[in-house]
Length: 96
Length: 200
Image 1 (cartoon, rainbow over the protein chains, first blue to last red):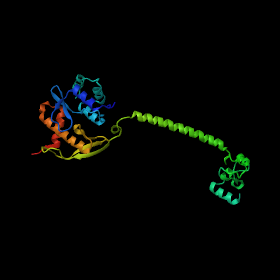
Image 2 (image 1 turned 90 degrees about the vertical axis):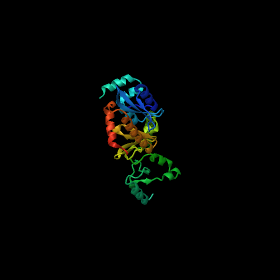
Image 3 (image 1 turned 90 degrees about the horizontal axis):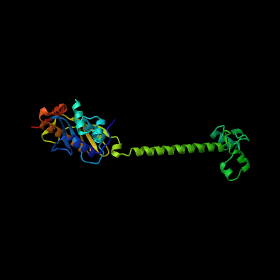
Image 4 (image 1 turned 180 degrees about the vertical axis):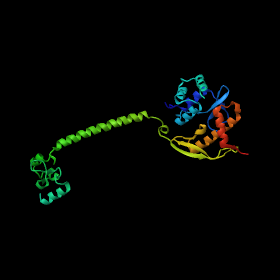
């Protein structure tokens, strides 16, 4: 399965609401950067999309999925609502 | 009709002659025994209609032209139906692919290098390879090693965004205690230290 097409704001909303990364203030670029903290350890980073209606380019979605340590279908589940925040962190604990 | 005409017709059409060569009642034309009927003259009534209609509708293969016309019309009808069917299918496939133009078209992918960073505090130790994905509506500048993706309306914007991402990541990781970094963040930090040096 490959990553579905989503609007940038859908991805932003899921990341902020479910993953709730630690946002670093003062980014030099146009996007906020977040860090994923699991049990006190920083395990990943994520570039948070802006609140736009535009369809996210597949490559950008792939990079975000990679940052979140998710397979394509897991990423789809995260955005499509079936993967909850706690379930996401459970998945992370099982990943090396 | 003289021998000269027969000879000319024979030279042009070969020994079988053209469809309008009328044989001696058999409908099979041979240059040596045929009479040439000028179609214009036939239309203008110079030839006996009776003779002409008896023979003109047979070609030199002996097959009636009416039958051949019917067969051609049938072929045309089938072709027309095939074309219409194909156009319908094409319309359907186009409807299925109704996505924004920038998404629908495959990007041009080129590789380039960045040689500096937009900061007086940092500089690159060596040029860094970057992949550019150029879409009609957006350009992505990718650094797969660090899963960094700069974006912009054009190549320059995308590259500048990527450079900003590199500095952001470096500074963020430097701000975090080493003990708090997981395996991947440690690897990113190590890669960045190899890539970037602080200016004095």
